[in-house]
Each structure stands twice: as C-alpha cells, then as structure tokens.
Length: 236
Image 1 (cartoon, helix red, strand yellow):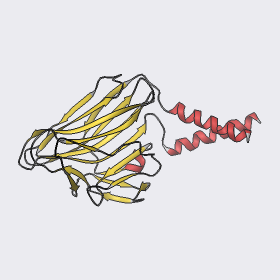
Image 2 (spheres, one colour; image 1 turned 30 degrees about the vertical axis):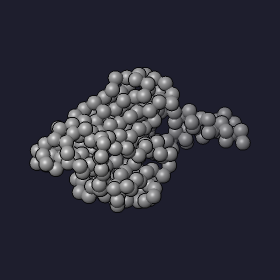
Image 3 (cartoon, rainbow, N blue to C red; image 1 turned 90 degrees about the vertical axis):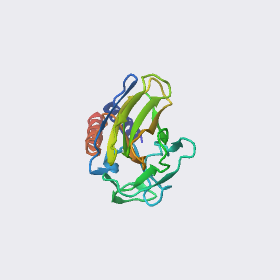
Image 4 (tube, one colour; image 1 turned 180 degrees about the vertical axis):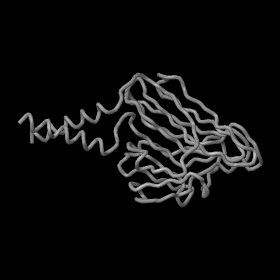
C-alpha cells in the first residue's frame, strides 16, 4: 500500500511539473480554423460542442467535469437556432450524451438579424496554472468581437475583432492563453456581433476546448508513469 501511495504521489508530481505555473497572463490570437477538429485530442482537460441535433443540444467531454460552462445569450430578446453548414467540422470519441461523433458541421447561431450587441457568453476555470482555451466561432454578413476577462482582473482583458464579409461567411478559432494570480478564479468569454454588414447578419458558435499549457500528450504521460515506476523499483 505504501508503494502505491508513493507511486501516486510521484506520478502527480510528474504530471504537475509538466504543466506551467506562471504569473497572471491573458493573451490571444485568431486564425482560420482547421477543416476538421478532433475535440478529444485538442481538449485534454475539457471540451464542449453545441447544437449537434437541436439548438439546445450540448455535448461534453465525459471526463471533463463540465469545466467549460454552457453559454448564456447576450442582448435582450436574443434567440438561438441550430447551425448545419459549418465548413469546420468537429469529431470526438469521449463525449456525453453522444459518445462518438465524426465530422459534424453543426453549431448554433443568433438569428435575430437586427444588428450588433447580440451574442454568447460562457466561463472556464482560472487559477495559477497556465491554460489554453480554443473557441471555434463564425459570422455571416457581420463582424464579431471576442473578449476574455479574468475575474480577479490580474491581467488586462483580451479583445479581438474578427472582420466579416458583406456577402459571406467567415470562420475562425481564437486561442486564449491565460492564468490568474490566485486560486478559484474564472475566465469569462464573450462573443458578440459588433458590426452589421447585411440583412441576414449573425454570429455562430460551434465548440470550445481546454488544456493545461505544457502538459504532454497521453503517450508522454505514460512514459512519465513508467519513469516513476522505475524510480520506485530502484528505491526498494
């Protein structure tokens, strides 16, 4: 029993040493999304996908402990409908309530078509560990702005506008790198329409995934576990 406890401690230390602990930070970037997103491999801590079969559908990582919250809407009278034609498609093999999904083009979007100030908001946990959050969004005949804010205000807010097209769809993935200055904080994400470029203007939200920065892939974790076991054997 003592050896098992020692191994668990060593493995936990190895895992945490792979994650970066840093001062408060909040930076971001935006880029075109990949044609196919594997949420299982991208979201090692947690992931979420909206609108699989209905506008109200929410799929999550089965072991993610719902760290990424469901969205709430921004703007009075804002309504949400299902997106069915996203050029960037999502897949996963560790979801709930749908365990396995391959290349779904689904998501949700705001369909009021009445100008800026409408959108989505959700939260993720924040503390002294550095994390990476990816948010997959889009817009049609509109420009949108993503804003990220730490609850303890320990780093300046991040805000970046995605320029839209008057007659077309623009999709992107925002990558947010963040850490708070203390434990028990949250990062709030707001994705809002900020420019109306046509009569059918809207913004879309597909999915988000979360990982600890610097944490290796599962294969590397297995090697870390093996190193811990070897260390135990040498100590016996």
